[in-house]
View (tube, rainbow, N blue to C red):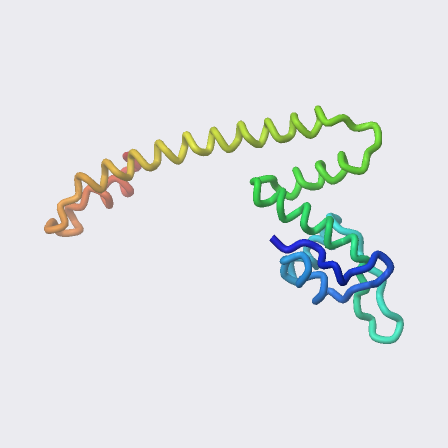
Length: 146
């Protein structure tokens, strides 16, 4: 995963292209995160109107990317970012959020295992030589069976 490169300094501003390169996040996604309030809108150059990002935005974008990789929604990420800057927040709040996400993932895995079993059963009933009018997979889909 891309991390801020050594060539960045904390007082140097960056174009959106450089931010994209350093964070590994696409330009349109960066703009989307701006609109969603996940990153602060950057200042604009007076001469060209180009966005000028503070290098710290790369760290925030990397946080967002890693949180998304763990399955957190943008709303979850917004809350995690809020917790990360609140001085009175406790790690217990973050743990609670992570436990909730783990529960969701476990529930989704159970659902996927049921779907897998149902689909495997339908596939095993399918005789490839039958006409599609007698296909158990199509019949199940039409009748809502699993």
